[in-house]
Image (cartoon, rainbow, N blue to C red; front, side, top):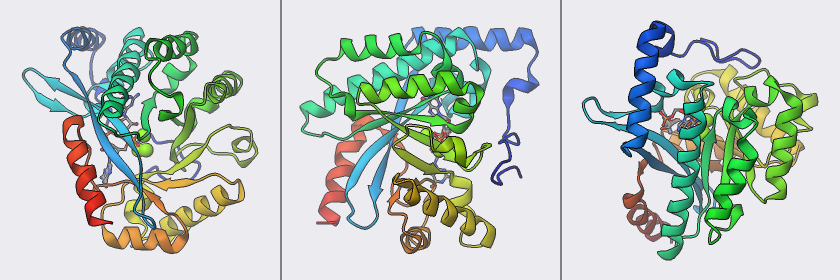
Length: 282
Ligand code: C2E
Ligand code: MG
Ligand code: MG
Ligand code: MG
């Protein structure tokens, strides 16, 4: 399994690779139609501080409510549009949906940041910054610091110079950037230092196995140590059990998200979940 530090994450099932060009184009047309018909949804997964029990934000995760195939996870459709203009447009839909959600929650008295996942190709697209600025301008009621972006290490390595410029511009807009799935790409300390990122997310594969595997525990520990040295907060994803949470707290990693805390949920379930969580941890 390619999950060691420095190994590319290439073992994941990739439906796009099994399709012919014709089938792929057909699938893309279905997706474009799905976008037009408003079939995509954002689910939200809470992020919490394990020590204070404060809810620090939510991650937006896309789903496709397919008319025939049901609710599809991103692995079923995102690989098909990698690097295409449709990816750029779906990415725009995601950011806009998150901004609309922020407006709704703000009206309900909920003021928590939403982080959206941005694909490497979307981040490095020449139109990305103007798209982002136009969206922010269209939702002036939203405080920009309530929107944050999650990007993969690989995005910054593909074109370091462009990535750096984009991330710096995001900083100027007060948009936080998190480095997602940290530890699965070709991370290099020297260049990590240059990246203006405000949060490190430990990949869920390391967290999942950290109780059984000494190596994975050592990787999590090293990432937490490094994040602290660079004064960056660190969040563990894939926290499935209390035992995971406890082990993370012992290592000094207090920010977490995972099924053990809450599964990704539709937006309308979140206020109820939040009220429950706050009542339980008062
Ligand atoms: P990610 O950003 O690393 O998101 C975390 C994934 O782990 C999500 O899968 C989430 O549902 C899952 N997860 C959370 N807690 C647990 C846990 O305790 N155990 C396990 N086994 N899994 C957990 P999901 O929603 O299927 O998303 C997969 C990936 O698809 C995401 O990984 C992200 O890279 C990508 N993605 C999701 N939504 C979007 C989007 O709107 N745009 C883009 N470009 N990519 C997205
Ligand atoms: Mg993410
Ligand atoms: Mg992740
Ligand atoms: Mg991941």
